[in-house]
Structures are given as C-alpha cells and as structure tokens.
Image 1 (spheres, one colour):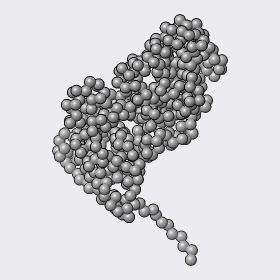
Image 2 (cartoon, rainbow, N blue to C red):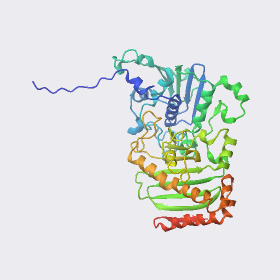
Image 3 (cartoon, rainbow, N blue to C red):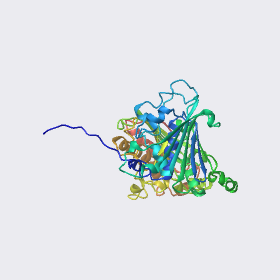
Image 4 (cartoon, rainbow, N blue to C red):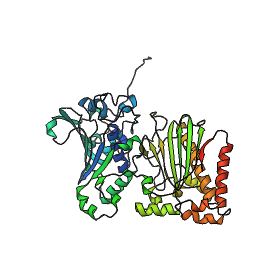
Length: 462
C-alpha cells in the first residue's frame, strides 16, 4: 500500500549543549558575543562586573519587551538582524539612539550569541526593560535542565519568567542585565587582565562602532591591587581604552589602501614623510565595496618604542587584525596566528618578504551581506573561504602588502646598493634615505614602475 506521510524533526534538549559551550569553547569569545549583542541593541555603555561567583554584563541598550523575549530571544537560531525586523520597534520615536541616517552594520547575525552564557556559567538571569516602559521582564534559565535527559524535547524545557513594576529595580532605567552564576571556571586577576587586553582589540576605534560605544570592567576585590599597578593598561577597573597604534607616536613606514566598488586608493608614508599616493580602477574585486587596509612595518626603532610604551613586545601583542563591521574577527592578529599565510610565505624568501614579526595593522570590512564574509560558527575560527574572502586576501597581498614590501626591501634593505642604508633600520626619520643616492634612486624606480602601468593614476609623489 502506497501512502504519503509527512514527518517532522524532533529536537533533543541536547541541542543546547551543541550550540552553547560545545560551540563557544573560549571564555573570552563568550564575553565578546554578549558584548556584541549589547552593541546591536544600541547600547552606548556596557559594564562587565565580576563579584565572587557572579559575572554580570549590564548595558543601556533598547531593552526587550515580553514579546521580544518570547518571539525573539527564546526563538533558537532566530535572528531579527537577518530578517530586517531588529529595529522595527525603534522607528523614529527616540532620537537619542544612533543616527539612522548613518550606515549601520550589525556585529552579530546567527542568533546563537545568547547561548554564550552557557559557556560561562550554569545559571542565567536576564533582566530587561525598554525605555519608557512601566514593566521589567525577567527570565531565569538553568542550563542544567537541558542536560538531564537528552530524550526530552528542547521545547518542553521550561524557563521561568516574571514581570515586575519598574519600581522593583530603582536604579535600572532601561537596557539589559545578564547575570551569570555558578561560573564554570574561576576569574582571577590575571584572567580578567587578559580579558581586558583582548577587549582593547575587540572594537575598531576608527569605525562608527567605536565612536559612541564604551566598555568598562568593575571588580571591587581588585581595587587595592589596582592602586599598586604601575602600568595603566594592567589596571582591572575602569573603561577599556581601544588600542590605537597612532597614539603611540611610533614613526615607521606605513601603507593605507581603500577599496570601494569603483576605485582603489593607496598611500605610502615613510616615518611621517609621504612617498606616493595612487588611484586605480577596481577591476578585479567585485565583492569588495568598502574595505580598508592599514599596515605598519616595524623597524628596530619602532619595535623598541612600542615595547617602551606598551610594556610588551609587538610580537606578543599581535600582528594584522581583521575587523568586520567594526568588530574583530578571531583569530586574525593573535600572537602566533598566520591566518593570512604571511609567515609561510616569508619562509620561502626570508630577505624578500615581510612576516607577522615585521608588521602591525588592520583590515576593515564593512558589509550588510551576511553570506559573503561569514564567520565560522565557533567564532574563533576566522572567516569561511568564500569567493569574497579569496578576493580580500588577494587584494591585501597585491594592493597593500607587496607594495609595502617593495619599498622596505628595495629601498630600506638595499644595503648592497648603498651601505649607508644599513643604519636606517634604527632611525625614526628618513634623513639617511634622503641623503642616500641609492635610496633616492630606488624610490624613483618604484614611482616609475607605477607610472608605467596605464591603469594607475599617480595622485602625488615626493
């Protein structure tokens, strides 16, 4: 007997572990995901609070209504950012939120960041209030309830909910508070300090994300130790200062490239002295419509200066960081990471190529297409190798890294042509190159090769 039946999937309560701490395997990444959720909720201030067995993340974002909790937060893998409904309730009713006339991108999009708290602790209390609302919503989740019996269905696990009047939390005007208890690992001073150093590199300070978004850490038990700390960035309590290389005043060779859908513009600057600026049509990178590269070559003087000011060697800080929509993508830039293959390439020509030890910089991607530059779901595995990602790497090498290498190798490292250049690596200015016939000759040769390319327009040169 032929009979057509339609069946449906059943979802085990064990799914929680798969998309929770089995997926987010790093405590720092878990905190980052929750911070990014605060940013996407239009928060301007986020406070991370450590108190014995409590970890609290408190923001002043738009908060959630009961309907939001039921239809969005408790809807597994649902993302209002992807379907375009994230900001429906904001509309134009509150001008205190970020200016809607500016192009705004979201930091998260998969709808699983809320499960990051499972990595950090076994219990979660979520308290949320929308601006102008008379009520406060509270959810209490015991992640252990999802692990007692994998034969039980996910949707059958109950989550406690309460509604309070706004007077119940007198000091809470609006936003969201996430309280995580029964922490799965201890947070001592050193671990919190490492978290702070990682948060310094989480947000690109030159994007719109970093302009009106502040993160701070509060840990009262470390206040006394902070008073004895001589290095400012090693103090636990206080706001996170986004790392900005330019503020170190390290004079070194740098290259800046900007790619939009029509043109690629590149500037090369050597220790404050402009060398050239060029423009060319974007013929090969159709997926790259708003990408920026900034790459610094660290000579001996720059490395020493960096170490004096930061309290650690550049190689221990990191190398070339990648930011998507203003937030860092891991593990790009981590010490020892070679996601872009620069060290592997350098092994093939040690004196011809630059590696992670020689470079510090950032790659910035701005996109509202979640498919082209997609992060690996575990959040610490980089980007999925799409056609857009391949163009990103190719353009980084061809329009940025190789042009910087050409200047460093052919001019600064060309000792055979002029032995005087051997001392240039320790200098914070270009006096030796400017007084060197060999150095000046090589710079002219670089400009000449660029001029010979009919596609390249030389905007200016020294």
